[in-house]
Image (cartoon, one colour):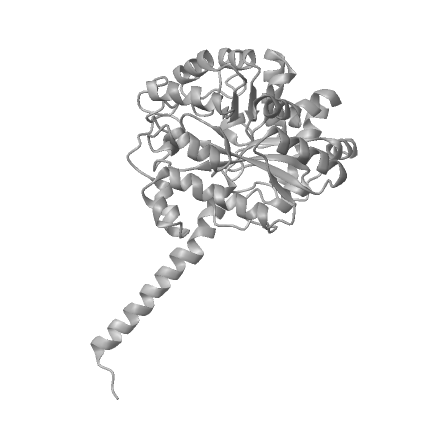
Length: 391
């Protein structure tokens, strides 16, 4: 039977549509991640014997990685992205904050953004997230939390999730006997994830979240962002959120907060706060980074400042630039208030993946830090804040 021309056209159009859908749902997610999360130098990483030996004895913690955003099995070793469980274990990273992103603007920048556009919606469609996530930022946070819990439950004990002091203490005891395990805790970039409802603090806490930032790249119902239009301080709802978070023993993250929001939080906060991923103006002057006064005020609350690894944070593309920022904070306020805050898998270009954190240990040694100081910087200070803050 002869097939008419219009039927051929319909058939080929159908095949084309299938091809487009396959590409969108099964090829595009990996390509998007690969283009956004690049590593300048691939492993293996060369360091001194002294650094490598010391690194094996450290308890290493990282305050920030957005790995749950991407459509990748974190239980499998990957050449894509910057973090997965095998690479955390290989890099001797004991504690990793897994931070979730629920909304970012198009044409994202560090100077001025509004909340009118939504990059994450397109990613959610591309990665086949549940329909509820299309309209609810809270659901997006919960979906990413479920991803981490799924990985932990299928990791054969290699990934633990930290929710309480008891969890943390038990994990550290187990790690003494079985070093080849790692742990994570959940954080949120921007309290717009509450969908404007303060009761969602309880919902997110129950899902395992133990850290949250008031803002991300735009102003929201909670407060002003360093990259927003108004850059105001905490709103009344924001002040209520801070009090509720402290009552539930959740850690307040000041990354991306406006100067006024930082001041307002520090006025209200009774416990240590963190800046999960940042640089400092003293070594890298831009709107993204902390001033000397902000560093001093955060240290005054016994908080910690997580130094990031990407160029906008440290004005450099290697471990020496990262350590230069660390040295600046230490010289300004002391060694007890600085930590690692990579921003791995956060749509940034970094010099190494998480197996290369040993390069920071090497650069700290070269810069003259003592082993005791290095232990605090690489994870001890973060551990102290977790012990003081977790329920």
